[in-house]
Length: 151
Image (tube, rainbow, N blue to C red; front, side):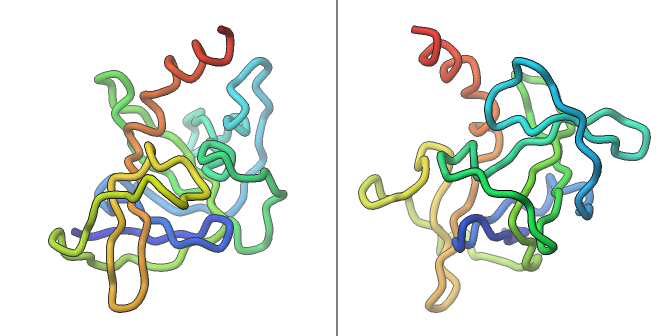
Protein backbone atom coordinates (compact mmCIF):
# COMPACT_ATOMS: atom_id res chain seq x y z
CA UNK A 1 0.00 0.00 0.00
CA UNK A 2 1.43 3.37 -1.00
CA UNK A 3 1.23 5.98 1.79
CA UNK A 4 2.20 9.58 2.47
CA UNK A 5 3.87 9.89 5.87
CA UNK A 6 3.48 13.02 7.95
CA UNK A 7 4.38 14.17 11.42
CA UNK A 8 1.96 15.09 14.20
CA UNK A 9 3.28 15.83 17.67
CA UNK A 10 6.43 13.81 17.06
CA UNK A 11 4.57 10.68 15.84
CA UNK A 12 4.61 9.37 12.25
CA UNK A 13 1.13 9.16 10.76
CA UNK A 14 0.19 8.17 7.21
CA UNK A 15 -2.55 8.67 4.64
CA UNK A 16 -3.23 6.52 1.59
CA UNK A 17 -1.27 8.28 -1.17
CA UNK A 18 -4.18 7.82 -3.59
CA UNK A 19 -6.35 10.41 -1.80
CA UNK A 20 -3.65 13.11 -1.75
CA UNK A 21 -4.13 15.76 -4.43
CA UNK A 22 -1.33 18.15 -3.49
CA UNK A 23 0.88 19.41 -0.68
CA UNK A 24 0.97 23.15 -0.02
CA UNK A 25 2.94 25.58 2.07
CA UNK A 26 0.88 27.44 4.65
CA UNK A 27 -1.77 29.70 3.14
CA UNK A 28 -3.96 32.54 4.44
CA UNK A 29 -6.90 31.13 6.41
CA UNK A 30 -10.36 32.71 6.70
CA UNK A 31 -12.06 31.96 10.01
CA UNK A 32 -15.42 30.19 10.07
CA UNK A 33 -17.76 31.18 12.92
CA UNK A 34 -19.31 28.27 14.88
CA UNK A 35 -17.18 25.66 13.09
CA UNK A 36 -16.12 22.49 14.95
CA UNK A 37 -12.98 23.15 17.03
CA UNK A 38 -10.70 21.22 14.66
CA UNK A 39 -11.74 23.27 11.60
CA UNK A 40 -9.10 25.96 11.30
CA UNK A 41 -11.02 27.89 8.65
CA UNK A 42 -11.21 28.08 4.88
CA UNK A 43 -8.38 28.29 2.37
CA UNK A 44 -8.23 29.02 -1.34
CA UNK A 45 -6.88 26.11 -3.39
CA UNK A 46 -6.65 27.03 -7.06
CA UNK A 47 -9.78 29.19 -6.88
CA UNK A 48 -11.78 26.66 -4.85
CA UNK A 49 -12.87 27.25 -1.24
CA UNK A 50 -11.59 24.35 0.87
CA UNK A 51 -12.05 23.71 4.61
CA UNK A 52 -8.82 23.34 6.59
CA UNK A 53 -8.79 20.71 9.34
CA UNK A 54 -6.15 20.66 12.09
CA UNK A 55 -5.31 16.97 12.48
CA UNK A 56 -3.70 17.59 15.88
CA UNK A 57 -6.96 18.93 17.29
CA UNK A 58 -9.07 16.23 15.63
CA UNK A 59 -6.90 13.55 17.23
CA UNK A 60 -7.28 15.18 20.65
CA UNK A 61 -3.77 16.60 20.72
CA UNK A 62 -2.79 20.07 21.86
CA UNK A 63 -3.29 22.86 19.30
CA UNK A 64 0.03 24.52 18.47
CA UNK A 65 0.91 27.30 16.07
CA UNK A 66 2.19 26.18 12.67
CA UNK A 67 5.96 26.19 12.10
CA UNK A 68 8.15 26.57 9.02
CA UNK A 69 7.83 22.78 8.53
CA UNK A 70 4.00 22.76 8.68
CA UNK A 71 2.20 21.87 5.46
CA UNK A 72 -1.33 21.62 4.14
CA UNK A 73 -2.11 18.22 2.61
CA UNK A 74 -5.05 18.53 0.22
CA UNK A 75 -7.04 15.29 0.11
CA UNK A 76 -10.32 13.97 -1.21
CA UNK A 77 -12.52 12.28 1.39
CA UNK A 78 -15.85 10.49 1.24
CA UNK A 79 -18.19 12.63 3.33
CA UNK A 80 -21.50 10.80 3.67
CA UNK A 81 -21.24 9.40 0.14
CA UNK A 82 -20.00 12.61 -1.49
CA UNK A 83 -16.35 13.18 -2.43
CA UNK A 84 -15.15 16.39 -0.77
CA UNK A 85 -11.83 18.24 -0.95
CA UNK A 86 -10.30 19.06 2.45
CA UNK A 87 -6.99 20.59 3.53
CA UNK A 88 -5.25 18.87 6.44
CA UNK A 89 -2.79 20.81 8.57
CA UNK A 90 0.21 18.64 9.44
CA UNK A 91 3.33 19.46 11.44
CA UNK A 92 5.54 18.07 8.69
CA UNK A 93 5.31 15.96 5.53
CA UNK A 94 7.94 13.23 5.27
CA UNK A 95 7.72 10.95 2.22
CA UNK A 96 5.67 8.71 -0.03
CA UNK A 97 6.54 5.09 0.72
CA UNK A 98 5.13 1.59 0.70
CA UNK A 99 3.88 -0.50 3.61
CA UNK A 100 2.95 -4.10 2.92
CA UNK A 101 -0.70 -4.89 3.77
CA UNK A 102 0.59 -7.88 5.76
CA UNK A 103 2.67 -5.47 7.88
CA UNK A 104 -0.40 -3.53 9.05
CA UNK A 105 -1.81 -4.61 12.40
CA UNK A 106 -4.91 -3.62 14.32
CA UNK A 107 -4.60 -0.54 16.51
CA UNK A 108 -3.98 -1.35 20.17
CA UNK A 109 -6.66 0.17 22.40
CA UNK A 110 -4.29 0.64 25.32
CA UNK A 111 -1.60 3.26 25.71
CA UNK A 112 -2.62 5.53 22.82
CA UNK A 113 -2.22 9.28 23.33
CA UNK A 114 -4.63 10.04 20.50
CA UNK A 115 -7.99 8.80 19.25
CA UNK A 116 -7.49 5.18 18.15
CA UNK A 117 -10.94 5.14 16.50
CA UNK A 118 -9.47 7.34 13.73
CA UNK A 119 -6.74 4.82 12.93
CA UNK A 120 -6.99 1.97 10.39
CA UNK A 121 -3.96 0.23 11.80
CA UNK A 122 -0.31 0.40 12.67
CA UNK A 123 2.12 -0.30 9.85
CA UNK A 124 5.54 -1.73 10.56
CA UNK A 125 8.55 -0.60 8.53
CA UNK A 126 11.63 -2.25 9.93
CA UNK A 127 11.93 -0.96 13.50
CA UNK A 128 9.58 1.98 12.86
CA UNK A 129 5.81 2.20 13.23
CA UNK A 130 3.47 4.22 11.04
CA UNK A 131 0.00 5.16 12.28
CA UNK A 132 -2.35 4.81 9.29
CA UNK A 133 -5.21 7.30 9.47
CA UNK A 134 -8.77 6.26 8.58
CA UNK A 135 -9.49 9.62 6.98
CA UNK A 136 -13.12 8.88 6.10
CA UNK A 137 -13.82 8.03 9.73
CA UNK A 138 -12.09 11.22 10.88
CA UNK A 139 -14.74 13.23 9.04
CA UNK A 140 -17.77 10.92 9.07
CA UNK A 141 -17.92 10.84 12.88
CA UNK A 142 -18.70 14.56 13.05
CA UNK A 143 -22.43 14.05 13.61
CA UNK A 144 -21.82 11.67 16.51
CA UNK A 145 -19.20 13.99 18.02
CA UNK A 146 -21.51 17.01 17.72
CA UNK A 147 -24.36 15.12 19.39
CA UNK A 148 -22.06 14.13 22.26
CA UNK A 149 -20.96 17.76 22.73
CA UNK A 150 -24.53 19.08 22.89
CA UNK A 151 -25.89 16.30 25.14
